[in-house]
Length: 414
Ligand SMILES: Cc1ncc(COP(=O)(O)O)c(C=O)c1O
Image (cartoon, rainbow, N blue to C red; front, side):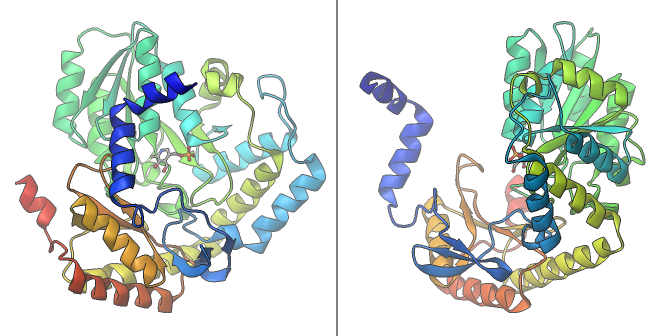
């Protein structure tokens, strides 16, 4: 065991992270433990109450009594877990949740996995074989990259294209030469920057090259598009050439991931996704809660929830811009304030924490070196006074740490 631990300590990433944690023992706020959660996104950490701006529960449905009741009902109906791979059996709640999801999303069918990570790591290698090519946006989520590694190990030719660049995709597809099928895998929202890909352009190029577009829309699910159906339907008008992946753990505040597809692909993916076949399912109680969330998203109430979320995003975005900061994102409820230097980014997060606000300090390797950001996740159930308080704290922060002004990223790219 000691030899194995010593060998792991030689790993570049581990060396970097341990060095970092040693340099900034008090400001390195990773592995944080939340002791208690209160209303309006208050959390208690190490005896201190702070407002949590680090949750993907964008619509605040984790605190909704209807969703909580559905979970309790699910436990009464099914127990805590049915304990069987879905390759053998599914509970009725699974079929109901998949049908409700499909109805809401506007696809013929959906297939639920225990997480988006497991959807990507099961479906991506399952979709392609030795005669096919897989082409991945270079900044696609880690779980897509891991899925691509499995596909490559299975003999699929894997290529990458420059981030969100349709011309680069066209070139790669052209240079890939002969292939039986091609799958192009991208994110629907790049969660570190909040950037949306040019879906219509990318899909047009896919269609020209007989390629299918695979969109991981984890961060768009529940918060973008009509009734929160994500980025794809609004951008493309249909799902004819797309497999769309959504999250049940973020905007949905439940658990799991799903792929929206045709009934034919639902059946094919069941047979080809190893994570589906060889792993356990989402616990049935969450499937009941997913049904309840689908009902909320499909009802007129969704507009009210979305409006509350947008109002909060606007308040924060306007306030940060008025402070003269470089703010990335804002079309989704994730705003990233550029800080730059790694130490400054950690100190900035720590300062805000001391002021009563938790935001995520994101540094290399999650973002490029010296491009650290404060990642602020806005929820529908944040109070206006909490956002105003965070803005005051950021204003104080600018007196201590010099933060880059607007358009810094564009100037650096030029
Ligand atoms: C694009 C994308 N895909 C996948 C995931 C991981 O999702 P899960 O936690 O369901 O595995 C994330 C998480 O942030 C994500 O942003």
